[in-house]
Length: 93
Image (cartoon, rainbow, N blue to C red; front, side, top):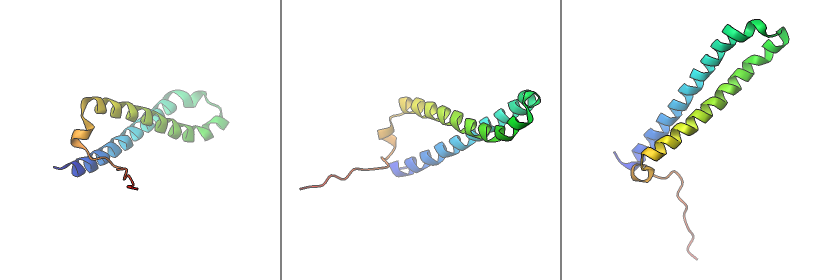
């Protein structure tokens, strides 16, 4: 495999990982909401809780994703295995 294929596979894998942890946290927060919080919340608070759970799951997944990528970058030499996505072309004047 060359660097371009490694880069594409890494991006696809990282995207899939991000989607999976977002869904996982969304389901976990929904379980916590229905098991523990729903009986204690008033009727008016139940209408805005679903969007709040969705936003919270996105935020938590983003934080977990950032730490996972940082950990992976410490373990793997990115320049050795991956091509840069954006290459700056310098002008010759």
